[in-house]
Amino acid sequence: MAAAHGITLLARQDFYGGRYALIKSDGTPTPDFFTALLFKTLVSTDVITVQGGFVSNETIRGYAFCARPSATAPAGSLVVLLLNVQNRTAVVAYGAGVASATPRLEYVLTSGAGGLTSPDVMLNGAGPLRVAADGSMPTLTGVPGRGSTTSLPPYSYGYVVLAGAKAAACSAVGAVWL
Image (tube, rainbow, N blue to C red):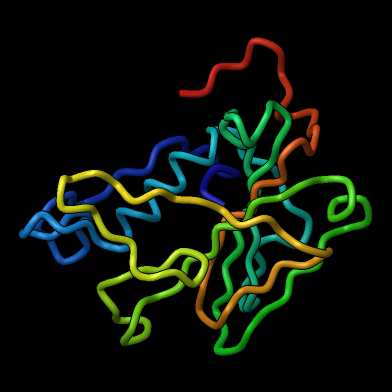
């Protein structure tokens, strides 16, 4: 939504040790850290308008971006960020042609044990995301989408990579992604 108003940079108030920091004072990454890492890994700087995206008081929100080109997302791929802000599972249906013609990877994030105030975040229902003892980051792997819908558990959000969507806005020759 901010990009539609010309905002091109987002800065965090706290990186380390603050109440909303990405890294706790003991060096442990917060759920926001993993969200930012996944966003930076999957999303380029190009924002795409979504019909029916953000509408005040809606319980499902959708935003779209060009995907950062990678082995699993060639140029022209899209990333859809979906948010379920209700206390029930939401099912998002894709338009004709998307589900059958476009492979997709889903990265669904939910809170850990303890609900919305949990200090943990889980990816695709697996155990909490943690930095390994040697300091390496966990592997952030999407699961292949099935059928023509994506299900989001209550109070969750997810990135859906529509690989090979061949979106003209994301296929610019010579485009540079930072």
